[in-house]
Length: 379
Image 1 (cartoon, one colour):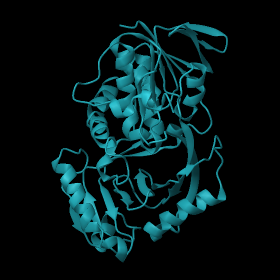
Image 2 (cartoon, rainbow, N blue to C red; image 1 turned 180 degrees about the horizontal axis):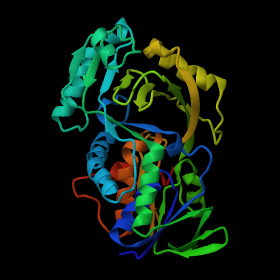
Image 3 (cartoon, rainbow, N blue to C red; image 1 turned 45 degrees about the vertical axis):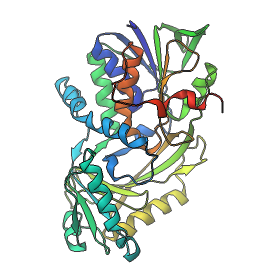
Image 4 (cartoon, helix red, strand yellow; image 1 turned 135 degrees about the vertical axis):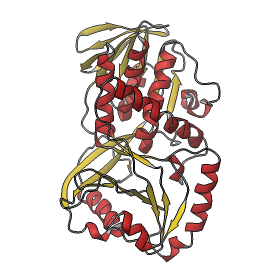
């Protein structure tokens, strides 16, 4: 078992890794540069992977396991007094925005029902609703083609969950450092991490650098093809509404709506592949996200545009996470490349990376081969 673990990257994945190492009783230091554009800081997560239509098949078994692990994690954080996470089961509406999409709603209903029967968590009994019934749950909504109600879907606040994981880690003895972590390599092992002149000894290293993971891989001679994908997310205020229990709104497009207490409505998000490390708010991004939001829910037209958050998602070439031991290195473990699914998958990935760093094997019923870093080693 590794006695001294260093985690580089303080987003949702790295914070989870540090928390789980600390809970095991091992010494852990979490190093974070707090880069502008960190995806976790911008994100509001939909915790219902069974509603997704586009990921590769390998995504789903892993995502179901990740979501099934959430209740235990939340219980541990609560027992640790780590604070609020923003996690709440509010249900979801899968909306048909026009007559064309209405014709596809039966297909989606059959898919979600099949997934639930196969064990997909956070769906519940799928119920068809007409426009009036959907609007009763989400008043600003327009759903001319009707909607499907999925009562067990949940949402989470990325900043709150990240901060709870960090506080929980500290309460179990973890050290948190802000700075630039540079791995020190000797042969096929990392022996330490240099943080702005301070040397940290390390028996194991977890790289969870999000969109910046590629630079860390390059420093170790490991190919990590993770590129930033900009996401612009709007926060709208409806001061006269209590929105805490409004359902998530999703559909046949990538954009979504979800809510938090106090009249806050989150509308997202752009998926700007090729954006580079550019965390600016752009006119085009706001226009796209706002247009999609008002198309789904024209009743939001009078809301206040309170804030725009920008996150640079770590996107891998095949859209799947990169998780496992770094090729050619004895004690370096990678957990990155989660793209737009970081808040769904990240806490679980961090826990798995922590286990690997401590010498534990992944659960025997979980196939991690599709996420192995070796799939990019020769490309």
